[in-house]
Length: 497
Image (cartoon, helix red, strand yellow):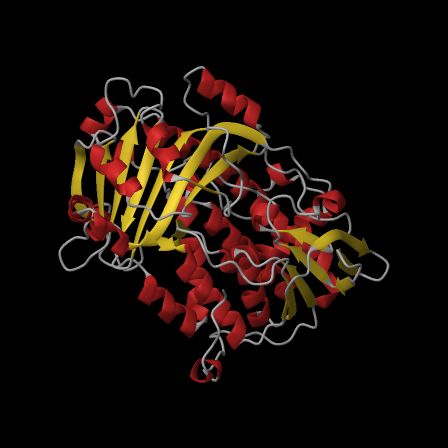
């Protein structure tokens, strides 16, 4: 259920730092995932008029954990309430530890802050942090309520349209009601009905992989003292993320003061679904752990199985991992309907980039619309796509590379350099500021578009993707072929660090 504000909270100030004058642009946001929620919040700050439609009766605040990068969370500085809440729920003083799936310690517990210092980074502004999805979503929902952004629930969108003569985009809900706006933001996720209008739909391909995921109150560990002791927090009640790496599999656990989370990547079993509401019985996991390839001699650590056994009923999700090629188009012909987040580009969970890029999308689009103004909405939408398309293509490819790293760990290399067991989080990802980038490069970007300069030949402003990289269309089939042949995924030229 969504959080309801107390009378004290509802009267709290919600004025952003760096508010912009009214633009007169009417924005309709479809969907309340991270992309849609951020778009609504930032469009208000940028001076646009905002309405939101949500297909369900409430905003879904359930789930476990995901990674949020600094490039996405920088915008909290404009919203004091968000910045304060984010600081309160973040994993300060977190630790990390790495095991083989058998339980053998590979990297002893280390403070994340110490790792950051060793890499020459400021622990106060880390490249990103693991966050609990319920806490993040409730934080965003409270912000929408403080801003009095109107949300209509139970409005399932079945079609999108645009009228280039009137300069309007729109959508139709399943009861036949029509909505119009200067720009419609399709943030309704994978399978958005906007694909028909945009023409960028790509077919999902099975990756052959899925993830068992569970999050539950920490009290459930009380039933097994050994599990409670093993998965305890660090001294001072400091949270810890433990990574477990095995042949063609990996797992993560997160221990917080109030919640226990575990995630296991595995081969498909036939019961998986691309849904956050699809639960299975824990016995399926316990049986499946030892049936994984390569487990004949070296099975999962008994303590990990005991953790699974502590999981309460109706908690474990078996989430199917589907691969999709990069979509060739993100907007309608007249640029009055624009896709953001998973509607435009889906990510594998191992990428650590899905939430980050969804938020970046929303910030970029809100900024472009503000700079362009009410008379130039199509130009603003197309500039936003030019800013985001190649960056997302690179981030998606990096996600596949990270997934391969976790699923096929080279232990000889890890012994020499433990960081080889960690997914890559390069500077070109987390150093980016999508708002500043849009403001600094908007005019030149629009000029290039009007001059018919191809996106891949753009040189009039600096790239927000690996320096030296030249965009070349790629597809899942080529990546799958490389993986089948034991080849390292070819990211392409450029500095990917």
